[in-house]
Amino acid sequence: MKRRQFIVSLAGTAAIGLTGWQMGRLVSARRLVKVTRSGWALGTSTTLTVFNHDASEADQAISAAFRELSLVEDVMSLYRPDSEICRLNRDGQLDNPHPYLVEVLNVAKQLAQDTDGFFDVTVQPLWSLHHKHAEAGTEASQAEIEQALAKVDWQRVNVTPERITLGGNGTAITLNGIAQGFAADAVGRTLAEYGIQHALIDTGEIGAIGSHAEKDAWTIGIKHPRKENDFLGLAALNGRCLATSGDYETRFSDDYSHHHLLDTRTGVSPVELSSVSVVAKTALQADALSTAVFLLGLKNGRKLIEATPGADALFVTKDGSETRTAGFPMIS
Image (cartoon, rainbow, N blue to C red; front, side, top):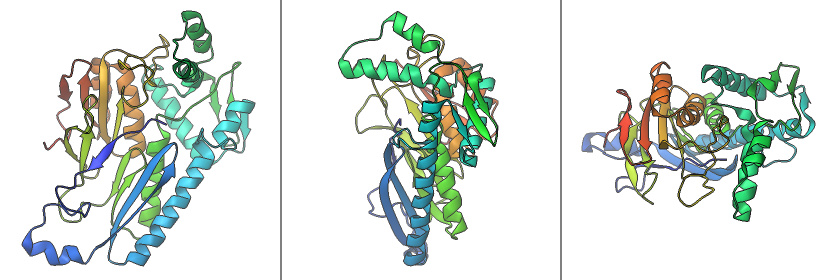
């Protein structure tokens, strides 16, 4: 799974989400207890941070949220051999799929249609080819790329509540561009069911429940695509979710020219952008859009964002230039 590297702005305090205290509000803030738990899910580290008046209730809610994450992994993880997606890729069909898989694949198919195939979950054979060569320190030949591309076509994925099938020999799917966002939304729903009103969710994508405990919004640092341990700036979620796709996340070459984001027309990585950060109404939407926009490029990607209600984006090109849509919530 691609790893989005976000860090909550601590601003010199040990309590996440409680920066910028004002003396008149300090007493009410102290009534909230912070409970944090980290784990591993969908190929990346996961951290859930909850603020609640009762630590025991918060801990119970987090336990339920991690059980929900495990369920999502059982359905969508390429790291669990018996997951539904792994069985689908092995057998070419899956009977009685979990509703989560049906939902995510239907969203993916719609986005593939909206982007003329730039977003394509059947990119897995192409990714496997480049990953194999990266491990060996070689590059895929044009003939190998063409052979992998012959297995890639989102229209071969047929989805019904009763059965999912993959048409074509060797077709396989990956949900790397959408599953982490879905997981963040699923965790958010679970925490809300347990009465949690303030929470920050990091499943590789960032989601939140409610508002910042002491400010108007959760404040998130967006990683710089070239400067290690540096940030492009801070973004305020304000009820939206955040996801980033970048050429630095899973690189196949040191010069950032070959990486996990692959154009299914050429079989190689696009050359225009270094990173795209998207805020949207749901983490699933932000996750999928960040991948699609990176592949579409600046001009067409911006058109897609501006045509999507509630979505905004920050773009960084290979030469380091930054641009963003009018509503992107950058605060520094």
